[in-house]
Image (cartoon, rainbow, N blue to C red; front, top):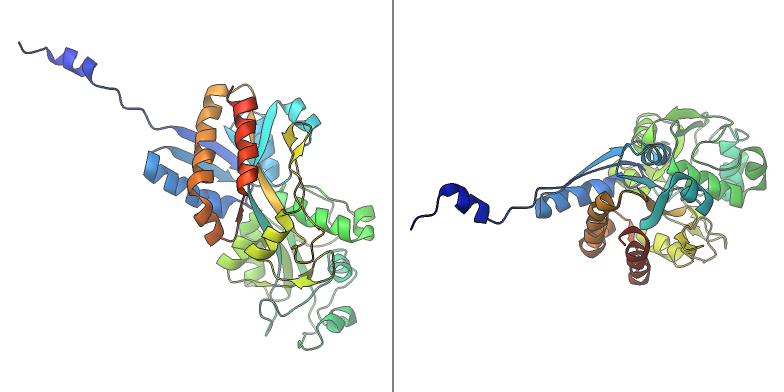
Length: 331
């Protein structure tokens, strides 16, 4: 007996439809997230749409429930999470490079200590051949050129990490400016995103700015050496970010929260930070899809992260995050 076609169709196992996940926020993580998303789509057919709009925008959009997840380099404290009805967990660690565009200066040749960097961004040091810069760099031929400061114009986790570092390292900055995703900058030209700051510095001689290290590498920008809290001048690198990450204490009041700028170690790069993902507490079904993506990233994305000089979370931290997913988000 031949079964009718409609019966045969019903007997077929339904294929699972590809999932579409919408996210927004941190430009800090964008180079990595775009590669993770591409590889995840190739393997699963699921699609991650991510808007690289800055941490401030990501926090706003996930709070307003216009995206499935936000990504931010400024973690929210417990009160903020409770108020917005959000869960939060870290996914990767990276660092912020201070970059310059000067003739005959290559990456790793210029040193800027905390006080000098602070005075540059306060507008107190205005010329590249200023005595204080020359004293730190006696072997460099520094031009008699005005310093042009390039900083973020949008709400930015990179700005949060940079200004948090300056606030810890320089009392005058802490008192006059402070830290946050947006601050009242004393001087400078605003550019949107890590992309915007990178492009402006690359195209204009005499500039100084701050960008996530992957952007510095991708755009062949010249980065400066910064001192650790112990006074040892360091390059931004996978190794020095890893050293800083050893001092992370992730869990605060049953939620994840940590800022690891200006960490204690001799070789801890001073502007290191984690990227956190925010998800709405009430969207249990959609959160399963989001967690599946980050679970995949934890299991299969470390080599991609390392290739872009991000630091994958240690195994122990991933286990903490996984427990958090199971206890709070997926139950």
